[in-house]
Image 1 (cartoon, rainbow, N blue to C red):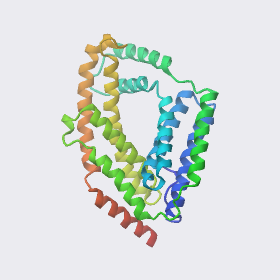
Image 2: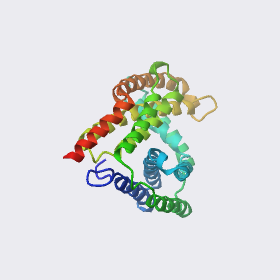
Image 3: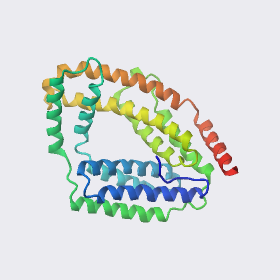
Image 4: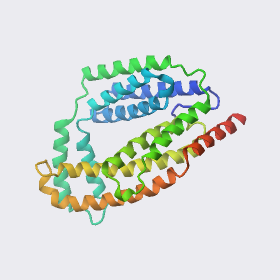
Length: 296
């Protein structure tokens, strides 16, 4: 979070958001242009920056209209082009997560699974060749041009606070009433909304660094618990009959189920803390905090 651009006391709200847009697109371009970075690392960084970009576009949707919707769709579609190996990486992450559990999988089983999954990943990885780099770079150029002409000059903090509260409300609404009975799809939807909220909160981090850092860290913990639950589901899917890891299904299923229960229990506690406040109170609190910062 350190060094990220965003809304600041010494800038207009629109100016701070424009700076954040430039920062996000600059970092995405840096990931593409760094030829010393392995393709997998470059793709990971680019996809992460696109999540930040899409969260910002969603925040500003009421002010950008159809243009913002188009930018969101394009960023989503381009990120999906780079995602063929995501399931394999998720399975590797799940395997590493299972190693933290007790009693865990036998070392030999873990080694064999890792080897098999890495072969799947190698066969599916998207090459970040010159043509694809040029395509992604062109999209960043177009996004940057659009951002320079966003109509944010007259935007006040009250409007931004309302937009932040809308993102908070969407995430809060996705919290299951009973985590233990929630479907994998419902938990995954909550995770997606938490990611958006987490990146939107980064945009006001320069105003209250200490407080916002703690909030973002809590959202990140929830994201990671829900992400680990999802990754374990991907690993289980690869072990379904007829799938590449089917021979290990009997060993994997009990371990996956137990670990998912632990993640769900932890996620429920974090969500209870993070979303205890009602959206209206969330908005008013941020408006009051901003007034205090401007009044200093």
